[in-house]
Amino acid sequence: MLPELPPQLVAALADAPLALVLVWMLVNLRREIATRADPPPAPAAPPTDTAREDLAAFKLEVARTYVPLSLIRDLDARLTQQLARFEEKLDEVSRAATAAAAITAHTPGRSIGFAIRAEEKQG
Image (cartoon, rainbow, N blue to C red; front, side, top):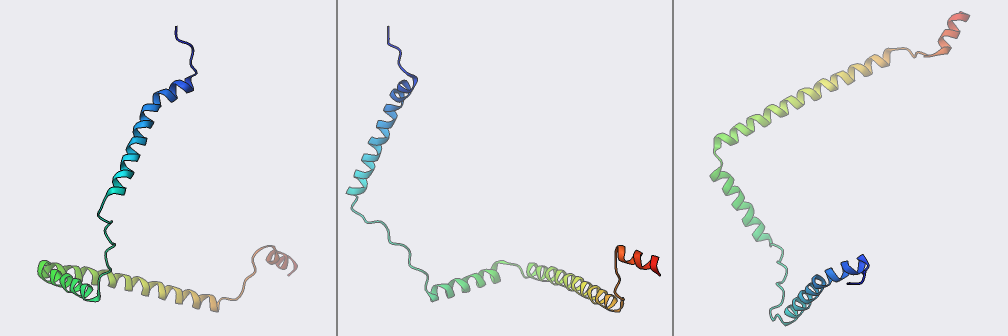
């Protein structure tokens, strides 16, 4: 009969072929990279100012050519409506804040709490 083997040893023996395959793959990969003749590609140069200007001109041309004028007008109208709503809301908040400041400026100071009750009892 086979001797009793500890479970850790059985697991290590089962994983050994996989570990050997991984080591073999790493060795072959390093050997291939070392023998490769072509150097890695150089990083791309940043675009020049003329390239940026050409790209901006192309984007403008695409916007003019491919977007129908009716869609641009519709978008402009919707943006204008939304901005008008924002302006109305800001005006309303500004008026409310001004009114609240005016009310608090004319209201005499009040005490809150037990001090008022004590003064009422004495008075």
